[in-house]
Image (cartoon, rainbow, N blue to C red; front, side):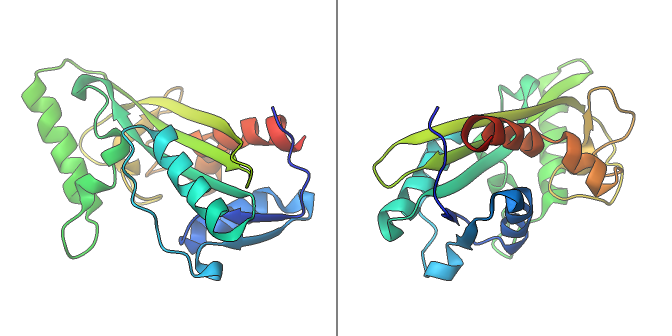
Length: 202
């Protein structure tokens, strides 16, 4: 694995919350961290069919545009009984034309699970794939997962997205009921970042 030895890193996102979370995780390394928004970069079209492909698209587009190393992520929910859907289309299931409605997306997931006839527990996992890319075209891929199951009805108002219907293995609360710091400590993103730190920064 290639170690990161630069002092500047572009986080390939327009999401300010995600930028702050990543900057906090990488704070011990003294990096100057910027985002797509800081460089006026558009969001590239995510045409991949896997988390790795979409994360690579975002990271390498940022590298090509700025000449800086870039870190991107792509994440979503895989439900076994639905053949891994929504997967890379996790956010798309929430699109309404007036913004994202994750209540609607969770209802769709439940409706399709019922229609599938699959017996409970409905096994599922949250996935996060980080790609750290360099301007010379090299990249390192760090996947993270959190195994669990889909529950119904929705429980909790914490978190975001599908958190109220996802109960992680070993816990009796959904992500939607969990304190955000506890969730962040055990989440799929935490798993991916632990691998990133160990592989390219430690």
